[in-house]
Image (cartoon, rainbow, N blue to C red; front, side, top):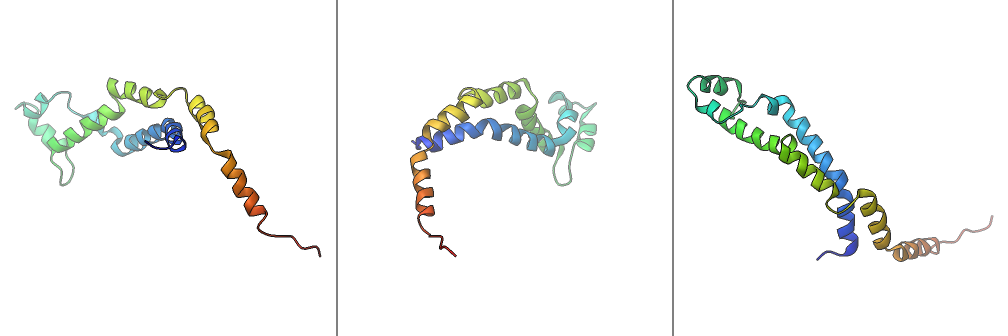
Length: 129
């Protein structure tokens, strides 16, 4: 089990890091997730399969692979699951102001920080001119 400082530090950062990761993923996928076929049947239907294969592909990546990857990205950024999951990631440890303020304050280790400052300040003398 990690020490309290590492544990509460990571808990405090979670509510900041997760939205940043989602923002980066949204930038990377762009509008591609909005142009996905609505069903796997669109990939296999004789009416739509050729269009999907032609328009929903990238150089070196078949349309089926691109659809699978973008469906996964959509589950992370846009689906009903994604919204619930983001809410969970933001608040599972409690309100961010409590996690950052109370837990961090209680477990920071001010004594060591003060000792380090005192040791540094005591390590040199200022000579009178």
